[in-house]
Amino acid sequence: MKALHCTHCGAAELEPGFVEDSGEGSRGYARWIQGALELGVFGGARRLGRPRRQIDAYRCVSCGHLELFAHHPV
Image (tube, rainbow, N blue to C red):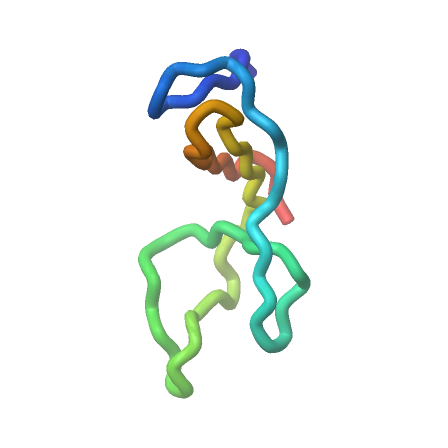
């Protein structure tokens, strides 16, 4: 992977972190799910059988912009 940089201001220093999900039944971190959002019968997102990936988040120390990547399958 290429060296990370901020796509907003161009700074080279990004600090790693994660996007928290504190909703009911959550595992504590957010995931990216392939495909357009479809709602199920009870109003929740339909996820069954869709590939999922961990979201890696990086924050620019200069301007605060977040960069999100979804590389690793969950």
